[in-house]
Length: 213
Image (tube, rainbow, N blue to C red):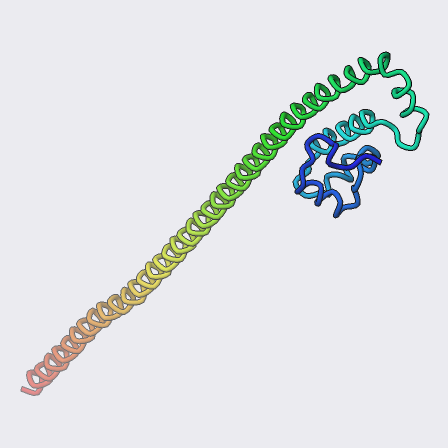
């Protein structure tokens, strides 16, 4: 089994986080899926993929355990296998260095992606807030316009009713005035008639007196 710290990009803090989530060996990480590793704190999708590849590389670079024949062979022929061991030793740091670079680049890319997502979320929230404020303002404006229109209609109706009452009052006053005039004319006529009757009576009395004489 390959220890977790042999995986490039895994320090003590990440080792503890991985172990807490059941990833205690490089083999466990290599068999895991990015979705499983994302559950570990500080591990995103990009970093999860990098860790899986690094774990596979660490397993491949670690000599298999439990094979004494393979270990004894280099001891019998040191002159032949030493250069091979040296080449393997030379290759291992290169592989680890490349993995380390890849891990740093992936972490930087993940960080940039998180920042971009955060910025997009903030912009979206600001846009939604502005839209809500605009809707609220438009609603208040529409409400004020409706109230003003209603008030104007009420004022117009009140003015119309007032004019109607005035017109009716004038109409009612006019017949009364006409009746007074008619009554005055009738009174004058009646007075003239009475005067004529009185004159006729006087004339009759005069004629009777003349006739007696």
